[in-house]
Length: 102
Image 1 (cartoon, one colour):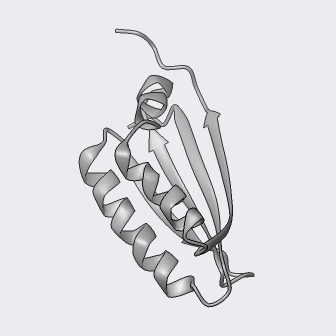
Image 2 (cartoon, one colour; image 1 turned 180 degrees about the horizontal axis):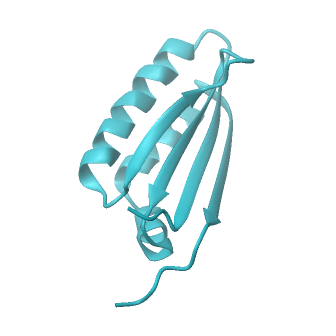
Image 3 (cartoon, one colour; image 1 turned 135 degrees about the vertical axis):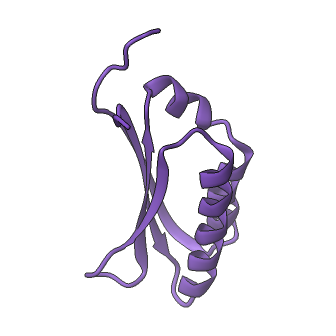
């Protein structure tokens, strides 16, 4: 499958909340990988900082990625942020290649 778009979320856990964040993100990714047209969602730990991770989503089209941003499971990131478990979030998206319309 050709990847045309990528979204990332960089997550930094608040002090003492790493296991809570890890469990929450793992659950969210299970739901997203099974309920969206995403090619795959992955979780990459930061080897230099044990309190941060990067979540990456890979998409066949920019339109699928954009539509996905309204998925209710993504509210989990804000829930963790508002609970104080996450100290910082950074969202990014990239269009790698424009997909051809059918």
